Length: 191
Ligand SMILES: C[S@@+](CC[C@H](N)C(=O)[O-])C[C@H]1O[C@@H](n2cnc3c(N)ncnc32)[C@H](O)[C@@H]1O
Image 1 (spheres, rainbow, N blue to C red):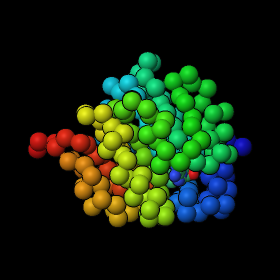
Image 2 (image 1 turned 180 degrees about the horizontal axis):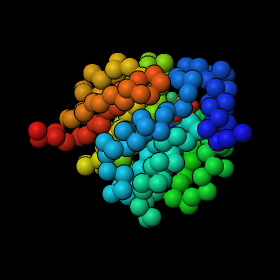
Image 3 (image 1 turned 60 degrees about the vertical axis):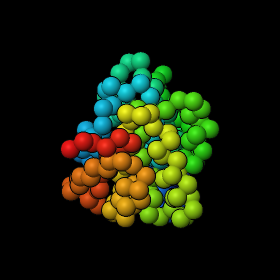
Image 4 (image 1 turned 180 degrees about the vertical axis):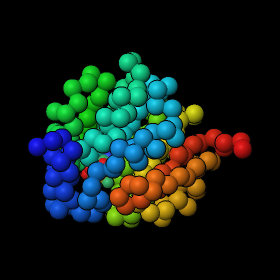
């Protein structure tokens, strides 16, 4: 079985077991991943954080773009998916953490992300959890950092605008379903 099909089956199984937590029946398409990562400077980052890494659709492309001395900390709450990630990417720059994104500050310590990639299904998460995670995002970023958020609806856009000085949006129409991509920064864009 090829890797893409295997990933889709694993993903579907995770969705069947916990639909609200997984929030999608297919991993993000390669095109949407590229569109999303193009909105931030992954090659220039020293620390990249990924929230909701799933089967690794973003993880592989982040590692491909990252510099040799950068680090990627990927959080995934589902232990089976976290194990898939560990086996799939034998890359010393990657640390897979099996924990909820709401505990990200515990894993960052004094460090701050230059790029934070977030594929959490905010619209289907329990509202309190969604709020806690969203409100923790600005504090996880360095002053010039960017949070790249992918969603299947624009519902959290107003919340992102409340939390960040600059929120740029683009749509990746060929993803199934079409994806809303947000690049969120602490500093205003100035244009
Ligand atoms: C929509 S899937 C995205 C998976 C992958 N990044 C992709 O784009 O194909 C959301 C992922 O977030 C994970 N997840 C959900 N809630 C989480 C939480 N509180 N902390 C960390 N991961 C979580 C799910 O297990 C799932 O793998």
